[in-house]
Image (cartoon, rainbow, N blue to C red; front, side):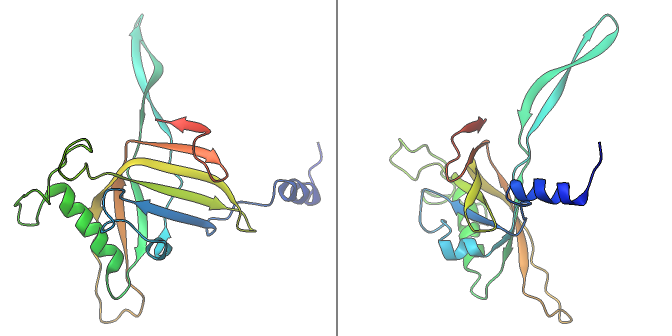
Amino acid sequence: MAFTVSNFKSNLAAAGGGARPALFSIDIDSSFTTATTFSPTDNILVKAAAIPASTIAPLAVNYGGRAYKWTGFRTFDNWTTTVINDETFFARQKIMEWMRLISGYMTGERDNTYGTPSRPSSTTVPYKEGEATVKQLSADGTVVQTYKFHNLWPTELAEIPMDWSSDVIQEYTVSWCYDSWTHGSGLTSSTSVVS
């Protein structure tokens, strides 16, 4: 079968063109307090992220002197975002506050505000998990794919290097743990569930 550049271009154009890594939006919502929820302005400062990976670990089953691979458990690696640091450290302060609510004060002290991971049915502060949504956009700005992370919380807030010889805006990464993600076409993430 002959292959031509015009065939390639017409096939790509028929599918709306290639998906572009710079066309995306991120929403991070702690869901339990506005002090740790990213506003639309804060979410704009999330410079980079990733569509989540899907991994099913192989499970070895031995029989007759051989190991046969069977489907094991689904695993979810941490999700990483890169955030642009503004001069007020506004987004970073929210992430630090979220981490304080999870594990208590930096000194290790705890009280009924910090480090109390009770469930929502309790009369105290609810469990400190949230959600994040990644939306892949088309060239015209339409949402074409949506991925939602469930039971999300920050596990690592990276350092910010400082250097007198550097003339760039500061950035830092945040690693997030989550239990599962859902996926869908367009604005919803309920058409296909991965959990």
